[in-house]
Length: 279
Image (tube, rainbow, N blue to C red; front, side, top):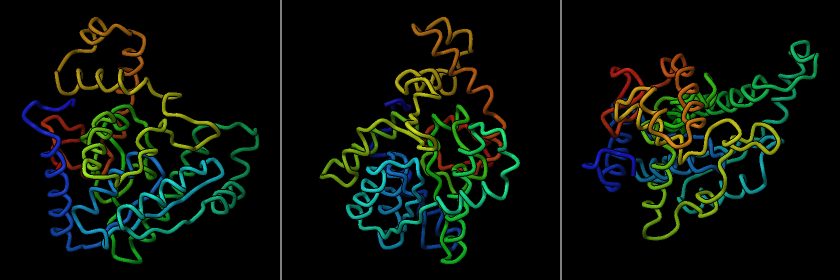
């Protein structure tokens, strides 16, 4: 596990669930809501929230688009059932089409880029915030440290929320904590853990289209963030110099997003956000 040697996986689980409880108590809130994408990050956050707040106080919203795979919906439904949390499905297709229609002159050239992808993420944030307001719940953010370090997220979209639960865990740590949660039986469906991660914002999208493989990315980021190596030292020490250079470039370009994220729960001693935003 890419953490300080003094921190065990059991302690990571205890730290995060304890901080979730403290945060909600301090805010005077009992209920949490999050988007369930069928991916490993939202699955882990849902499990941590259920452990911290009680399954009866956690609500998941599935928000599929035309790019969502069938297994994303079925995996999310199975997750909710396994955890005992409530859930519902609100497709975003009609909202997306309406927004695209209202702004059709923006897209007159027919070109597809991150604008359409970000619009989907922001529509999902709109739905989560509406539920939050209506039912007095706090929105749990599901972004991990690998994504945050490289700017792989949408401001005012999937980077929104009242609290960032796993923002101090790299992607490889997310998988390890999922395995720990399943130690006494499957609470997070195995398919969620083993399938290739994807934002599902365009046809056939995978995280590896935009990011180096997490086995390389997380080690580069850890060397920079936790070990304090310079960019030059990292480039000199990593066998895959091209992948390391790509990770460094992404990290350098993402700092403006990190300055705008919600408070994050910390596990290690080197969080990404300014100290006053960490809990």
